[in-house]
Length: 251
Image 1 (cartoon, one colour):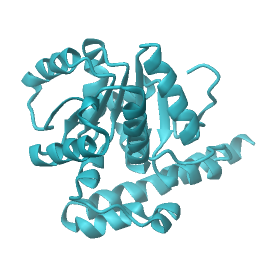
Image 2 (cartoon, one colour):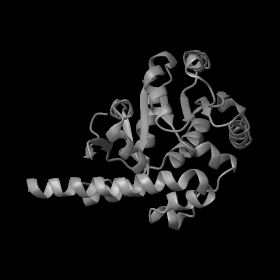
Image 3 (cartoon, one colour):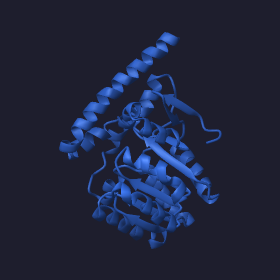
């Protein structure tokens, strides 16, 4: 994006944007029917991008790259750079749904289990009206179905696409099929559908502000999440210290 400062954290770019600035850029892009690919990065995604070239490429190719986790804001500071605030994916999604209702944008929801994505659509329909819904589909499909789903999304004439599928599948899917889908704004939203549907509770604001949202999530799904967060968080800290030492040597 023009006139947007982009910093580097461990060889992965992140845009220095506030929530308000991000929403404004997206709104302008949708109004002009331009195509904008958005991604958020957290500690786990930065770690995985170091060893997964396809994931890293799918991040770098995006038009807007926001800091999803508070840890990314702190990491920037540790590496003597600046990010104004975190722009959490779920908060951005909620803001854009409200914007869509105000501006008449149509939204397609892709991801999660069938009952979960249906609840998300029901909730937003009740809150804003059915006119904002372009369509929806669950996130359980094989590679042979991907292109057909991309054409389904194109045919829906959606202005906004939210994809709630785990990484790196959602990033790779969006990067691979965005030219087919032709949606003005596309974004991966991870587990946001689970939160919106009520399946998973979001961490209290104080835990979000001190970077412990991951811990709250782990307490709700310990069997699935503890190993993932323990492994990636430790790797993230190690990676940052290596990067800081490299900066010190260059100083």
